Length: 401
Ligand code: NAI
Image (cartoon, rainbow, N blue to C red):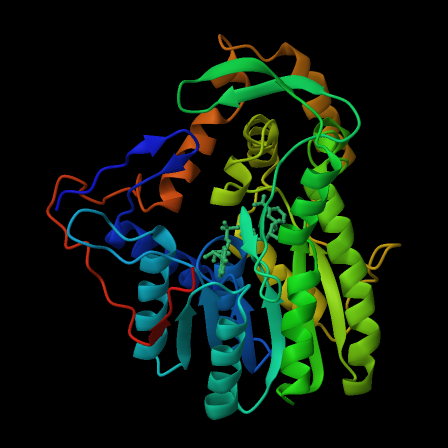
């Protein structure tokens, strides 16, 4: 099959196995260039196939030599369709880890379900004994509640009043005003049910009840705060409410884990191009301006650079810096520098369709978006035939719903 990108709205419906492999190989090379560190040994990553979760898995494996179990929900290829990028990423990650005799196994299915939790617990018990780090990095539009069977859909809406602001279609290169009506109570509750902390707590409580958490266990989930410009749609919107719930969950888990000398932490990360962030109105334009400024300053980072800092400078550092007033690890420190944010605020009102490509890094945004799916990798021949069917060496796949 000759595999080319097919963009539909803010998703790409194809992925390139060799391009995805190259993305993973580059992240591994970055971690190796930083040298080995004393870090976690037995790691569970929930949401391990793309974005921040994949970076966490790669960093723990190739930086600290950890054994990892990755849970995710990805599609295998068939005769007509390529696999999803997370499938190809994991195939590459596992085979590159196994080449170095590093343990890596994966479970593909709905992490919100009881079945996947049970399978994961069995695998931990059989192969690892206990885990000492659990990364919770799910980003999903939907959750089926494992007890009630109720289906929740998350929404990305403001709360209280409509929001009108600038947004871009990065592929058409157009700036337009969007108006988004506020969420109702039901939509807020649904978003909290999907992206809040209940499922993280269910994972941790279940693993604790099965005696699978090591003494000193750490668990980390990821959040975003961002600047005033995005607050109406993010921090003060439905997703922000879900992130507040995630924080309350972290605080409750932190108390519970004290009996194991453990901790539950939220790391606030920088805005990056992932499948999850592309879906949020306003955010792609913000990212396009942010990237331009941070690249000029030489402070631009992707997932892997930040996660490496999280592991080495925060979680496993001998003398980690203090967390912020609310107890967050702040990997968004470089994004939130006052000079960066002042430049964004100044540029924001001046951006139009005509000056978008000069004033912002919309080209860099597009490029990174394509790269998520294995496209736009320099030197890769996208006219060549490639076999879309790629196996993940150690996978347990379950179609839960
Ligand atoms: P992503 O879309 O790249 O990755 C999501 C992961 O969740 C994938 O591995 C996917 O397979 C898995 N997943 C989704 N639904 C699942 C299900 N039902 N069962 C099992 N696995 C499932 O997302 P990204 O951007 O890496 O987000 C991860 C976390 O980081 C989220 O909490 C997000 O809010 C947070 N974050 C993201 C930022 C961004 O700019 N992308 C910035 C700061 C925080």
